[in-house]
Image 1 (cartoon, rainbow, N blue to C red):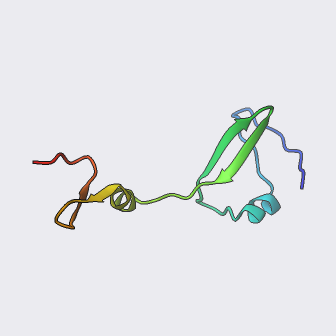
Image 2 (cartoon, one colour):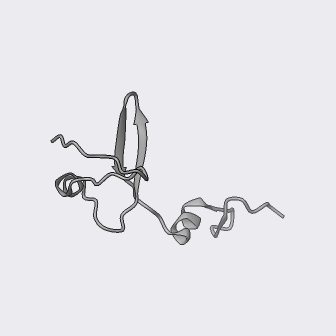
Length: 74
């Protein structure tokens, strides 16, 4: 699916709805954009909450409890 769009004076482009729908992107979703050669690549970004990020970074200590990964041993 190809579309031609115009870049506004402020650098904005309108992404056609059918492309957004095919990627599962909706209002309020965050996306990543990057350069791949002479093309731009856009992909949906999955965000984790701060709470989820802290949980992912936790590690299990010898007592079987969790603590943040950056906590020093005492």
